[in-house]
Amino acid sequence: MIRPCLLLALLAALLTSGCQTKPPSAMDQPMVARFFLEVRPGTPGTAVQLPVSRVVLNVNPKPVLVEYDIADVNFAKVDLGWCLYFQFTAAAARDLYRLSASNLGGRLVLMLNNAPVGARRLDQPIADGNLLIFVEVPNEELPPIAERLKRTAAAIAKKNR
Image (cartoon, rainbow, N blue to C red):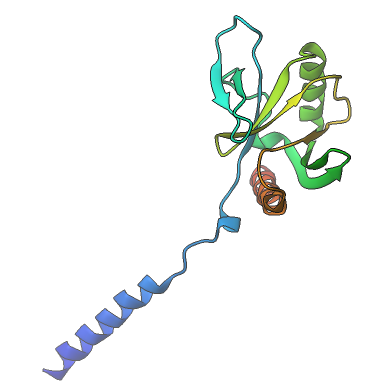
């Protein structure tokens, strides 16, 4: 009679110990950055709304730059305030140059995990593969966002080697 009780107690201990795992922190969750190009007036697109300014932008539903194109991400302080600083791979930098040159006056919309957070007007061709973009989130959230984006980009690059 002692053996079944001991076996039952051991089984209960094993089952309840598995329930004490900690959920992953928000910093461990991937953050996917995708850039969408604003469509010209009269062209069908998908409407997205920025969270703070409530600006509605009509974008092409297919992204022009995706998480595979990102080489590095940081946050930076410039004259107008804090922003995200994206560095793209060589191939993506060429694509960025071509699309920025052919869409002057349009906007590039940044979506993080499918949520629009910022837009950058294309006022000149972007030749160096580096993009500064202001996002509509509090400044104190920029360092963790940049870190999560950097980790996601590094994980993708490692997986594709």
